[in-house]
Amino acid sequence: MYIIVVGGGKVGFHLAKALVAEGHEILVLERDSKKCEAIADELGSVVVHGDGCEAATLADAGAARADVMVAVTGDDEDNLVVCQVAKLKFNVPRTIARINNPKNELIFRKLGIGETVSSTQVIMERIQSELPSHPLLHLLDLRQYGLELVDIKLTRGSASVGKRLRDLKLPASSVVPLIISKRQGVLVPNGDTVLEDEDEVVAVTRTETEDALRAQFTGS
Image 1 (cartoon, rainbow, N blue to C red):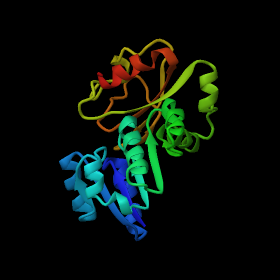
Image 2: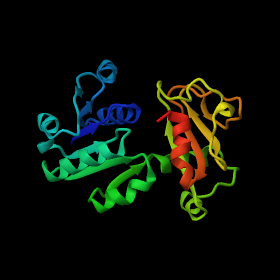
Image 3: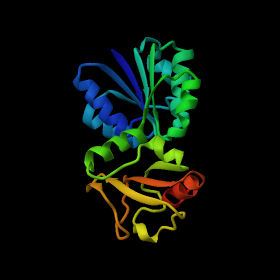
Image 4: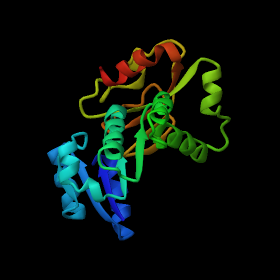
């Protein structure tokens, strides 16, 4: 099959690597030239520098003959646009979108993007496998109590990188039960845990304070 992967971050890279190993024809579209170079060094000429949200870029990538379009950028809006353009303009038979914020899943389905992957749900399953002895509420159960399970990916420019968890002014009733660290693996953090670039922070907060919590970690 010919599969176009839009987004060459950690998810897109490992997905492409696995698909290449299975013998599929793969093309990765990535806006960041440095990420393109890293992918090319590892996988060869399967990556193109370009914006997968643009119809012209998708046309040049051969979207008209693609069997599958997979959008796995860190931006839900971009993933939605990629899949809609692929379906409506290029008639790609199968589109799959990564959803970073589970609140957006219903919107994706209403707009015809039936196959989605929620990173929050994946992390929830990972928590359950890593900490089987800890009682955990399912994500839907949390919402019944006005709570949200929030997945925040830190980048080099995030405001919290290099800070201790205790130094952040998190909203009341917010807790951070888990951090998935690239360097240290899965951590159950404490106040002295120092946040690092590329950490995935799993937090629980009230629905109305989610934006404030995200701002403490990312600075946006």
